[in-house]
Amino acid sequence: MSTSLFSIAFGVGTQNRQGNWLEVFYALPQLNPTSELVAKAAEKLGYQGGNQAIAFTSTQAADLAEALKGVDAAQSALLTRLAESHNPLVATFLAEDAALTSTPEAYLKLHLLSHRLVKPHGLSLAGIFPLLPNVAWTSQGAVDLNELAERQLEARLKGELLEVFSVDKFPKMTDYVVPAGVRIADSARVRLGAYIGEGTTVMHEGFVNFNGGTEGPGMIEGRVSAGVFVGKGSDLGGGCSTMGTLSGGGNIIISVGEGCLIGANAGIGIPLGDRNTVEAGLYITAGTKVNLLDEGNALVKVVKARELAGQADLLFRRNSLTGAVECKTHKSAIELNEALHAHN
Image (cartoon, rainbow, N blue to C red; front, top):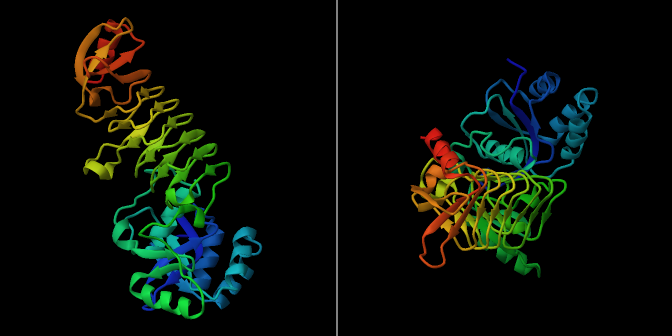
């Protein structure tokens, strides 16, 4: 068996009464773990190779913690704590970054993103949705929807309230990890699997989906959809939107370059290059007809917005007299034509 792994993590989670995993918490997920760590874990937990989630006992956790003392002090300390758990434990081994096959694997990959170990689009998340059960996220943790009514009654009979915060496949990120150097005004609006770069502020109306996020620093007052990555120094104004790949069923990866501004209630359905500005209230989709103006405000040509995808230093606006969508650039007409032809 190879001792080279893509990722490994030891976690504690929640199962329903049938023993199916609802969620898993990994305090210290590792990318490219050492061969010594993998060898000790494989020996103690019976790992034989491949991508596998292995349930283990508190006794096995204590044994592995002892075996790792001279190998990985942090993981040894974690396993010492896991040995105290009354909840089910699981070790997840990923030999390779392949399509997902279990709920613990899915949660490990979401953790890798939110721990900033991998950036959005850096992992295979194929098959994730069927492996994330839709559960009630409550004041007592994850609860199987089929068991919720009984759990609510049990709480009431004890004079308690089982509060349901949401019913969803994804939990909020901050229940699993709070990355260093960020501000998140409403934690319910950032899902586990979001990548929130240092220096990022997510205001109350901001939203960041899984497999999307920010390089940081930046201000997010709008929506960062699944698969969208926002570059350094870019701001998303209140109520603005970025169209994720899931929104239209397409495969164009929407991104926002560095130093961009998307105005309040605006939106994009194309990737933005660096230092782009989209006027407040203007939504640009790939097929939007755009009057392309040069540095002297002369009309160069009419193009579809997708032809401007990824180009730097553009200002998108709507003409207040004609209603036409315009794109202003600092380039001359000759330079602009050459740049457009270069992208044909």
